[in-house]
Amino acid sequence: MTRWSLSSILLGTLFLGCQSSYAEETKPLENQPAMNQPISFRSDSSWDTVDSNGKVLGKAQYVCLNEKTPLPCPPRARIYRHPSPGGWSANLTGIPGARWIWGPEKIMSSIPAANSRFSFRKTISLPRKPVFGFIQVAADDSASIAINGSPVGDSGSTSDIQEAVRSQSILKTYDIRPFLRAGKNEIVVRAQNGPASFAGGSGADSWQHNPAGVVFGGWIFCGNLPANRVK
Image (cartoon, rainbow, N blue to C red; front, top):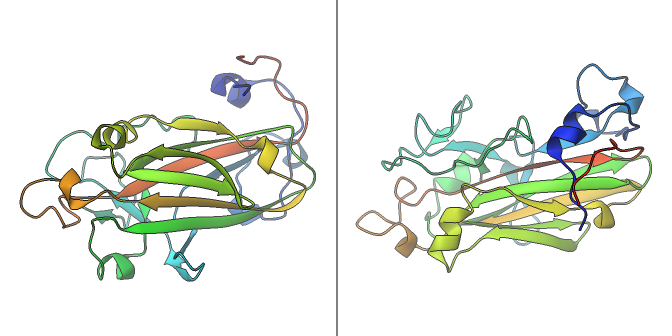
């Protein structure tokens, strides 16, 4: 897979981007003509949350481990009040605006934390097949990505606690260009919390002791790319 320097993509010289017909779902880079923009997408409260049967449960909910993690904690976020320091430390500067999310508050309040799972879905429309696109993802405890029904990649684990811990602090990057097409494209991120044993001790099956979240985002380019790239 060819990888591109995020700094060269975000700060590169002139290139042609995509123009989406879903303006509310995408955000172009600032200070560029509208027709010359890449499309960005990121985890936020605009994503539909769906169950395993595809039923929409509501919009995604912002979540924070505690009042100080991550900073800034978005307004109206569910704060788990997790007592341990650290966690959720993935560097999100390459996907500005991405926030940790989980299922709707009304659903979370009625289910156990352990092994809870949600899918986050959004459709974007592209005028032509892109020349490049990527997605980055971190999870507590696991996530898998699909575009137009095809699996793209995953992060974390619900069986290996060490891998689950790593996935909170490292963004995994995947090339999504092969899965994108002109017209409508469905992006789905399926996320799952780990078992109660991941938290340990008493109260492990509470959201406070066994929190869950996923964060992701990416960029799509339809025209010429910046000259600098990393093989």
